[in-house]
Length: 133
Image (cartoon, rainbow, N blue to C red):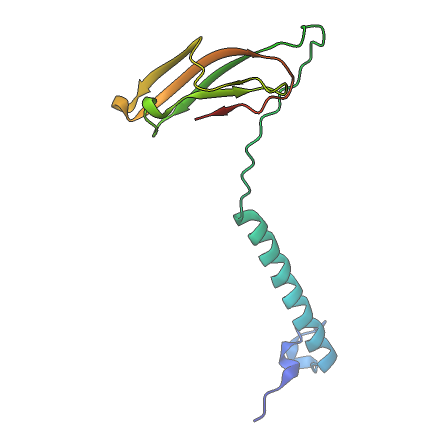
């Protein structure tokens, strides 16, 4: 018995024993199933893939502050030793401080396996590229 392509017609209106499948119905059914599979895989791919964006924007709501913004950090790094943690500050004017230690404190976590870094500093502009290292 040859393969009957019309078996794929899944949009019959009445019970199977009272109807005859058509090639057009089978083609529409296969196209719909392929389209549903494409949509499912597209959404699954978008859900699984992650995009990490490392940006920090600071909005200055007080424009009369003289161009200075106070920043407070409290960062817990459970798997990074305190000897490796530091703070580099660079503002939009080009001022760059490497290893900033004023008003900062390193507290060991997990018996020295981790570190909590707390610090305070002032910056000149609303958008500084500030990094911790």
